[in-house]
Structure formats: structure tokens, C-alpha cells
Image (tube, rainbow, N blue to C red; front, side, top):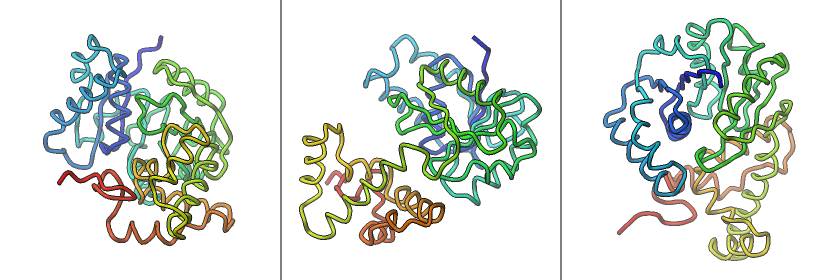
Length: 283
């Protein structure tokens, strides 16, 4: 197996989870953020312990994970990495700025990937100097548990880059599915109309959130209902994805439910904020 060293731009939820995934397979990781996050090591160790208790990391592997992860605010340190993954907020402007900055350390031969769930890979590639080695690498939350990774080929992504990305993901014990760029790719193109329709059902008073979720769990064999899943994803992220689908396709069927917009404006972002369609705050 190739000796990988991974650089991750973005130390949010997905950036940390992808770093943990790599480290749990013995791959060294440098995770960059625009500022050093206080208590990063302590928080990272806590996340690793939780994933171990869930059975996603063996006890033997747990001890060496922290040694494989370095946190920095110096982007130049990522120059030694042969796989670079941008995992900042799902915002076109922010991602474009970070990808442009990554060009300074992305010398020839390196894979440069964006962990986007809906944004145009071809458009983001235009912010980089070498579009042939740039592609989408869509991990699903939580990356430790979800086997699928959508490998999205931009208009100018080389086949060699797709092959290298696939080999890397196989080394992480993931199931990579390569596909050409299309709005929402495959999973989100199917998933978010369902989530959106569940919000419409709730807002129309057809039933409560728990019942709507139970219907999909028991009637469609889904492990989690659409509203609970929306809370896990983050309602702000759900809203952003639906708005992107409307923008990219021009199809009104993706129009976000007004109740979803209302919740996001009120700061009800789901599980991460303590409140969404369900209340997660401990009284």
C-alpha cells in the first residue's frame, strides 16, 4: 500500500472526523485551521473514544491515533502531504478561498479533493492551478460509520486522479463510487427532497415529527427518520443544499420548506445547536 500522508483543510466536524478515519488506519494527518482551536487534542481524543465505544475503532488502534494527528494554523506544513482534502464550511466563497491558498502547497502529483456535498466540482476546480488533479470526495457523516464515498469527476479531472483517489479510499476501507458531476450527485439528489417533504408534512400539521420519522423507519426500513436525520446533518446545511439544488437545476421541486428557513433563522440548527425538530438540551 502506498505511504499516504493526508492534509486536511478545516477542523470542523467533518474535518476532524475525516482526520480520525485516516488516523485510525495508521495514516499520518495534518489538520489545518485558520486559527489553533483550544483543547483540540482533548476534544479529538474524546471523539476517538466515542467512536471506539461504538465499535468503529479497535482498542488496539485507539492508543496510537493521537500520535498520527497534528493540528496547525500554518498551511505551509501541508506541503509534505500527498493527499489534500478541503473540508471547510459548505460555502462556495469560503471553499474557493481555501482552495486557492492550498495551491501554494499542492505541488505536482498530489491529489486535491473537496469534501462538498452539492457544490460544482468544476467551478471549484477553476480556483486551482491544476484542474486535472482536482475532484470531489464526498464523505458522509459520520465518516467512521458510513461506507460510501462519492468520487465526483469534474469536467477536467483526469482519469488518473480518479484512480488514485479510489485507491486511497479503498485503503480507508471505504466504498468509492465514481460519477460525473451532476447537481447533488446521487445521494443528496434523492435524499433532500424526502427531508424537505417531511418538513412540509410537519408544517402542514399532518403529524408530529416523531410520527413522521417512525413511518419512514417502519414503512421504508430506514434506520433513522428524515427529520431526525436533518437534525443530525444540521438544518443550516440542509437549507444550503436545497438552495444549491434549486440554483443548479432551476427546478422548483427542491424549494426549501418555509419552516426549515424559519428554524435556521431562529438558530435552531439541529443536534449541534441543541434544538431542531427535536430538543437535545439536557434540562
